[in-house]
Amino acid sequence: MTMIAPSRPATPSPLDFALVNKTGMTVTHVYVSPTHEDHWGDDVMEEDVLANNETVDIEFDTKETICSWDLKVTDSDGDEVEWEELNLCKASKITLKYENKKPTAIVE
Image (cartoon, rainbow, N blue to C red; front, side, top):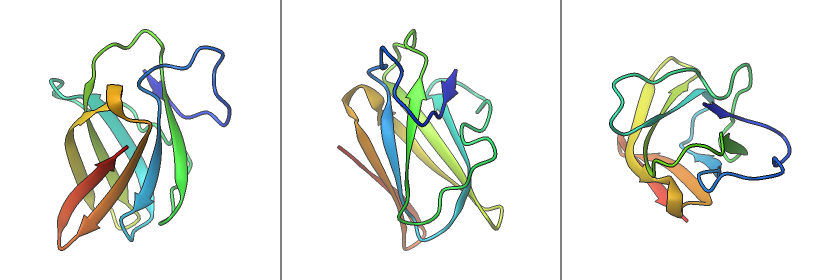
């Protein structure tokens, strides 16, 4: 379903985006799921980690057409934070923040 790759595929999906970590924590797992789904699926980061202030490209199968997605990250302490109903059809970059115990996302 979703994968991370160092280079862009020949036909990029309109859902692809750059994920920027401004949470103040090291992200060890990233899960992306359509908003209406009840399960998260696989970690799209696999063995990688995303340190604070780092960016990673999230790429989708070009067949995906759903725009509304939820995103969950797990940090190095095992804590989970979720962002809901992100419109990936209108996003090329998503900056995740976690301030005052509240997750926010800046979608550009």
